[in-house]
Image (cartoon, rainbow, N blue to C red; front, side, top):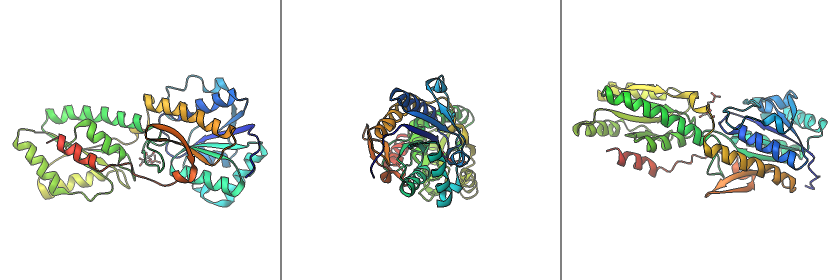
Length: 327
Ligand code: F6P
């Protein structure tokens, strides 16, 4: 596809918001301004695009947002955008505003939408990985993960205080509908006795044994981190079975959306800044249909189709690490 010179771009954030998306927006807007490119911010992800909800942005529109969680552009999940007829409408809206290219910050669903729009209507797109779940193929990191993990760690540490004071077992459920990345990292970092992944059948016998072994050597409280699975509340079912079948009572705490909010941690600010800048420069250099990823510690530009699947960045060895260290 012969690329025309990029004069105007648009940016949107899509899917579940994640801390650091504002750093991405800030970087895109300010890099664009630096290159003399006009930039629009589309509100509410693809839904907003379909409703022509957008505003022109300048350097001041992104002032004082680097420390804010959420996304100033708002976000949404847009089932409509899965349909070609709606994508055709979106392409027309972009054309009517002379928008030459689109940058999308989101997860696998958002990238699939961007790819379809690009292939069907010859629109240059760039993806920036943004989801707390760290579950996108082709990249080792998604913006928001570090903050979410830190939020969960802080919460688990607090629960540990009360668990220890009252000799209790706690099941703490962390986010990740189809990803266990948060659970695993939090489990290792909080010294959890067990980490229950999405992908594995719960081995109740093993959990009960570990808790009893701990008790025999005077350990009276345990923390079990549970990846939420398809529906939030999985930890309640596990708690019931532990009590009914193994006579182990436990308390449940579902951390939920608290993990999506909050001021972005250093990694999310840093990679947000870097990836936003690289996205604009990639377009400026005439490349399109790419994603900006982190691979083995380096930020890289890769074809977008490498990053369209869910991928659980879970190294199951880390489960062993959590368990071995918490004997
Ligand atoms: O953003 C990713 C994620 O937080 C998942 O971990 C979670 O299950 C899901 O989004 C919840 O989405 P929603 O807020 O739309 O219910």
